[in-house]
Length: 166
Image (cartoon, rainbow, N blue to C red):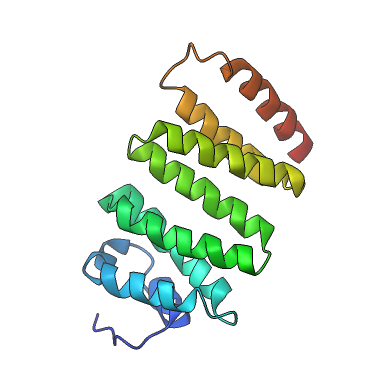
């Protein structure tokens, strides 16, 4: 697929939707994707599309290719813009992805701190489904040390929140 460098997030989303069966064709276009996302994330009119594109391709690159360091920087850009736009739900979602990335890179302290911030913001915003996602991140982290004294508390609070979501 020959992709012109001047495309925007909307174009990339359309390309991916038309060829969504296998995202491996994205690998050679990683730098172009990063550039488009970093450019469009700071355009208020394009933020939501750039955000959607980021989450779509981040899941591929982080779970398949694992070039996490450079993608965490892109997520931080998105977080800053979401904060600027006062979009609390997207801030929480981005924080959760950053926490997940740190967990996958073995940065457990950073991961814990990010998940805790995501949980706090989700709680403040009464975004129960994101509270569940943040608790899930903490539980994944605590899985590495089941003797962690907080694991039972976190599991209980997560279950309380899940019951509210249902």
